[in-house]
Image (cartoon, rainbow, N blue to C red; front, side, top):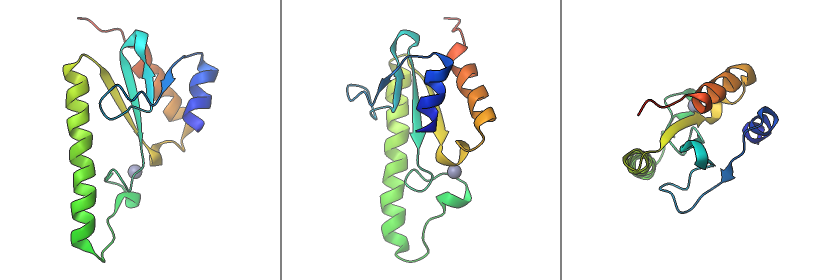
Length: 114
Ligand SMILES: [Zn+2]
C-alpha cells in the first residue's frame, strides 16, 4: 500500500489493523493517539464517481452500503469518545502523492491542546 510506504519513509511508526479498537483501524499511532482509516470508495459510500451505487438491485445495495456507512459512523463516534483523533483517507485520494503526504504529516504532527 502506497500510504504505508510513505509513512515509513517519513519516519512514522504505527501498527496495522488493531482489532481491539472500534472499526479495526488500518493504521494506529498509539503514542499520538491517532488512527487512520483507508476506505474503499465503493464499499464505504464515498461521494465521488467511484462511490456510485449500481443502478440494478438498488434496494440491495442501498441496504448493504447504507449499513456500512452507519457502522463507519458508529466506529468513529466510539473512537472519538475514547479520545482518539481520526483521519479518513479515501481510495481516490491516494493517487495525488504530494497532497496525501501533506495531509498525513499535518494530521500526525498536530499537537493537541487539551
Ligand atoms: Zn472516492
